[in-house]
Amino acid sequence: MRASRRPIPWHFLIPALIAGAGVLLPLAYLVLRAFEAEPQTLAELVLRERNLRLLLNTVILLVGVLSGTALLALPLAWLTTRSDLRGKRLWTMLLTLPLAVPGFVGAYALLGATGPGGMLEALLGINWPRPWGYWGAWGVLVLFTYPYLFLNLRAGLLGLDPSLEEAAQSLGYRRIEVFFKVVLPQLRPAFYAGGLLVGLHVLGDFGVVSLMRYETFSYAIYLQYSASFDRIYAAWLSLMLIALTGGLLWLESRLLAGLSFSRVGLGSARLARPVPLGSWRWLSYPLLLAPVVGALLIPLATMLYWALRFPHENRVSVSEALANSAQAAAPAALVAVLLALPLAYLGVRFPSPFSRLLERTAYLGYATPPLAFALALIFFSLRGAPFLYQTLTLLVLAYALHFMAEAIGPMRSALYQAPPRLEEAARNLGYGPLQAFLKATFPLLWRGVLASLALVFLSSVKELPLTFLLAPVGYSTLATQIWAYTSEAMYAEAAPYALLIVLFSACFVGLLISQERRK
Image (cartoon, rainbow, N blue to C red; front, side, top):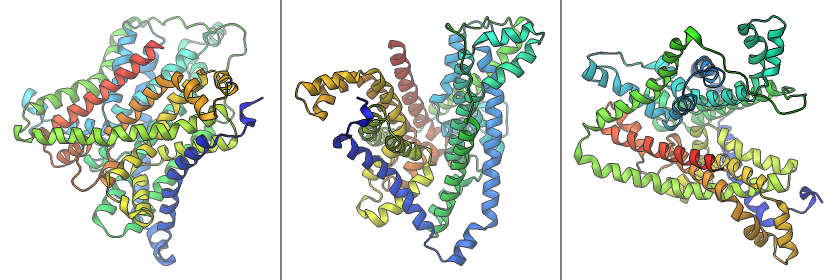
């Protein structure tokens, strides 16, 4: 009997429904709050000239970052997969490590290294102008989001069957023509998947654009909420940003529709023969070093330079921010796993349109820009649960609901590897559905559970927009302290917080890599 035809156990169904409601109810209330104004006021809010300027700024930044990451990630992926480059594994690891540096930490490092009194002027005598505005935001976002596209393109190149390229070469096509006519079209799914991750990151970013003083929808939402009593306009800005995000998701699904690049021949695919770089070898090293220097060496050097100038009397505040970050992130990771487990279980053991809809709801919370999600939770808590407003509990719930999608993937993969017959055997021995799951299946999920806990914990520690709007009054974390000091050009005071958050990220990235190698 197919698992999807059996009745869904209530102890999985109810938590899954609670998880879905936790994401949908605040968003629904955001819509209701936005339409509370009079029709004339609504028309004035929606048709403001400022909205068009925000839209143009956001779209220009989105397109610019997508183009920049593509131009950077594609040659890097090709060099580490298809060429005879030495030390490919080392280069791949170095080119992936910028994921451990949050964008706003990268912005802090860039601002702290440039300008009058910056690290470059103090150590090298180079007074490099601080890159404010569009180009500053563009540079930081490209440097710290390209690994999303790099990893997707690298996986795509490794999965291509070289027989098609060999056939094209036998027909007289040059190697460069084969790349553009055969290889590049097959990389479209990788481009779309990586581009979607980069695009969602850009649309939801607040730290980078605010520190670089480039006004996008996210930055405008924060300014409108924090400096004005017109919360309806803030709600409309949030809805516009959500609509833009939905448009990006729709575009990605439309571009992927009907694509199929699977092999039709028999046998296993071969690896492509490495292409000799020849005289191009020495030109490839500057390209490989550029993101390593810009996204790793300069930020680390900047943080160490300013950390040596940190006022010693502020050490207590550093330990307090570290404790606050862990205090909020640890329970959030646990709650996210508890909410995601029923969703992953229903999707694997009881596949149906209903279970897929519940799972997509979790991804809706993840795709919603953090500031818009935070504003929705504020409006919902003020009307529906005022006792939660500006409490640590609301912040923990926001982390858990927003990052719940990150916890689903590892546990779903572990569930696919756990034989369902073990649960059936336990049921035949007289155990109930929940007991059978806990005794037969749950012990096999520990790797997936640990990976999920680590992912959500790390994301919560690095999260800035949700913390800004939802944290209790006076509750500072590593992320908020970095932003606060950097926005006031107090780079020495921000340095220890930046170092700690990068160390947190590096440790958890290393943990996940070690878990993958043990598999």
